[in-house]
Amino acid sequence: MTKIFLSKDEANFLKELQKIYYMAIIKEKVDDWVNQIANPQVGWVEVLNHLNEILRDAQADVEELLDERIATGEIKDKSQARKSIVGNAFSNVIIYIFIQNKLVGNLAEGIYITAKKSTIPSFERISTINVGEETQKPDMDLIIYSLKENADLDKCIILSLKTSLRERAGQTYKWKLLMEIAMSDCEVRDKYDISYNPPTIPLICFVTVNFYDEINNPQHRGMFKFFDRAFIGKPIDSESTNFISPLSNLIDFANESLR
Picture 1: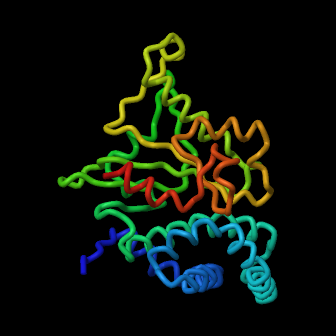
Picture 2: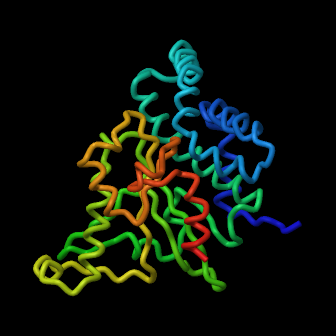
């Protein structure tokens, strides 16, 4: 059996995940969903398409946890705590499932995931576009990447995660558009003194669980075209929603893009 190597950051993530009080509930629901599938290699891919229902199903239990913490004085503002949990849980559950896909052999060797951009070599250059004397950076939550034999960054995918398109969904696609302007020979680039010189060109992707059924809004559908790929953690009819892909496709996309 091939030995699976996790990065130091991935191994630490699995250890720290156990200490995040609300993630025990969500992790259990993810594990239970996967355990219903006879083949774990299939289960760990397909569960990505059911994050909407899993996160919704966990809400009542998380609310009880918050009530307990309010009662003990561990938190004071339940609304603020809830808001923080929603965003962090989405990011954490994707990292957890991605690592499990590594452990069952669904990902090619040498592909990693992190929320800590500082751990990636040369990432500052990849994520910084100069506009005159100012800089612009993308709204990014996770990075999937591969390394060269000398441990330098080889290729990477930047993921912007949004539970709702009411959030800052436009911020990332605008950075993607700015990146393409910076790499093109056009008057706009010269007019605004836009420059960008990364060691490798990142792929910019968008991920949502679409809690409020917003993806069919024409304005939002147009936005998805700017990304290298957009994914949704919810079952969809792929023929009628060809502008966005099931989140399960992220595994193959990473394998194909980062080798």
